[in-house]
Amino acid sequence: MKHVSLGGLDVSRIGLGAMTMAGTYTTGGGLDDAESIRTIHRAMDLGATHIDTAEIYGPFHSEEIV
Image (cartoon, rainbow, N blue to C red):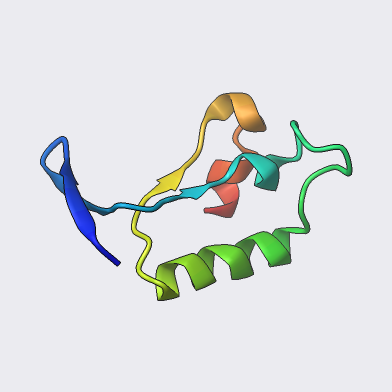
């Protein structure tokens, strides 16, 4: 995975968005927490170092999962 500088930090060019992990903006509710954790681990295995969360998603559920 390629990396770039973001505010002085070295981050992956592709990140993982955690909005659906909270379930607020999905039609079927949030993802199963275990599935969310597997997804995070897989993204990290593939080289992702940037995970996008926001308190408005949950509130705070996606941050707790990460």
